Image (spheres, rainbow, N blue to C red):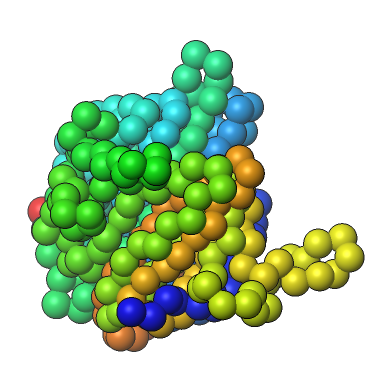
Length: 300
């Protein structure tokens, strides 16, 4: 067994999206080769309704899959195919945009005005870029939760983990997407297939991601007030990108730690990216925007 070393720790950055939604972006819209087959991860967390109520009005997607995981509040959604619904706390929606779809997502807070969720984009391989669009809406009660004797728990959204399979299936990137909670002071080792790219996104507490040997400095985008390295310590709203290996290990801090652990097999295909549309070539991208302009974008 080989523990994956930390390649780098990235602090998510404040970003404005949609019609004026304040969120934090962990990665996306740049060189995302280290995250292949994933393209983007946004953390939309807010307690000020004026910072999210304008939402994400009608916009197109083609060539990708979007995964929305909600922790607080709700999101009303609708699309150009006539689908509509509302996601609540704990729910997941996996949308395969495929050949093209227009949709909107309008967040609403809970009784205290809180809104919290994540959106992950997964790339589609060239052979499935123009597949028919489809949705998988999964209620919170359908998502299995496994708890170990030490109190570590995992919600399994998709893929197989700890002998259980998540309810979302048929995804091109064949990802494993789990929500992990480790109690204060506990140390856990979790398996991740060596053929996959993998990352963790911390959204509660903090912890150290490293092997059992003496800590080695890792490249971070932030240091403490004295300019010292964090030695693999990841705090709230930070993303940990792992190097190769078949396990990750985490030592939870004094307040415990909760994080998304996501892995997928890289597609190793060229990426031509234009906002919400991701194709393989610039010509395909130009064609998509031309179809959007002339009204032939929707194929279904």
